[in-house]
Amino acid sequence: MLLGEYNHTLDTKGRVAIPAKFKDTLGADAIITRGLDNCLFLFAKKEWEALAAKLVALPLAQANSRAFVRLMLAGAMEVSLDNQGRILIPDYLRKYAGLAKEVTFAGLASRAEIWDSSRWAEYKRKTEGASEEIAEKLGELGI
Image (cartoon, rainbow, N blue to C red; front, side, top):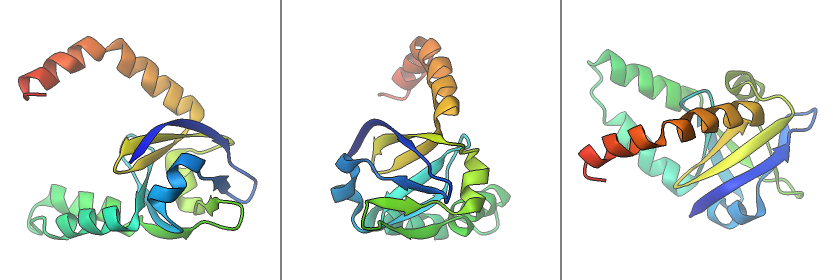
């Protein structure tokens, strides 16, 4: 399970070290793709395959389904850990997520998110400020 927050530095070639606690769960090869809220999603292959199967089963006739499938699948790329435990984040994904130098990995059980650290701090500040409202809405869903 991928849990916790970890800060790392993106090098000039677009490589970043995977948090040590994530390496066993992700394995030697993982899938990176566009995420929501302008972050990147990082999946172990097995988790990705399960999600991809659900995505391709979405109704082709619905515009929102097509758009979401395109966002997730067309942006996906397999990445391999190098000898130093780093992955190379493709340029188009670094631009999408606005990654500069400092990045934050957020473990969310079945996936990790990769954020520009300043964007992550702002997102957390807003979310933590609305935590009571969010909890109330989730309570309505039975959570």
